[in-house]
Length: 297
Ligand code: G1P
Image (tube, rainbow, N blue to C red; front, top):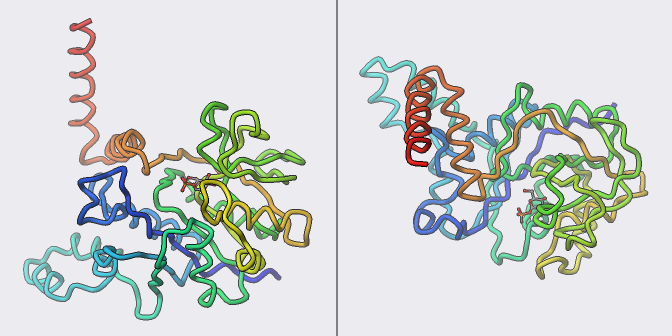
């Protein structure tokens, strides 16, 4: 029997400069898609995959995240008095049991690999997940759950993967494919942010990982890589060919890059259109502006 994956790391230390001025005082992860913060989507996905311990790697200015996951007795009492059970239920989804959530500070922005390494003592000797809340994935079966199921078969390290247009590959970690078995691929190598000539394929790593503790040992020895940062990709790649080899997992679902404004807007529209209470109005609006656009041409 494989050890179950019950811990997840959420690296949320980034300054979110692409969303300034909003992120001057609000952590990027609290920005909302429709009415739920980005981080809530990540937590819901983790819970659906069986995660019980949530480890946030934060930085200065992120205390709003701690408040978000805390109980708010005054607000709850107010809602109870007014019999707003539906809102109370929504609030319940944001609460964390005592001891289920931990916050670790990354004191310097040394890269994603370093952020994950900051959580090493809380992970100890177990497999663990990493979720990058910027990558929001709409899926019938949540992406991490799909991966946990696949991982039960393969073991090793597993990264979510998706084909991207070749000219975009240099924005990602990219897999060098060894055996392509459909939804699962085994890999020969991984390159972080390769140049167009270096990219071994256009199968890109997306922000969901199931990793073995050996990746944390690799990070102990890691020097800075692409962009002068300590790269998680390099630490995972160092396991290729060992007992903890690396698999890519082509998930079923639609990924939105909510680290970019365009991706964030697309996710907002997609999630709003998926909502019964918003679909009709929004659809009408989108049709109207399309007509106006056409008339102006
Ligand atoms: C990070 C990872 C990269 C991965 C990407 C997915 O990069 O380093 O390997 O492909 O997330 O979103 P970032 O987007 O933080 O530069």
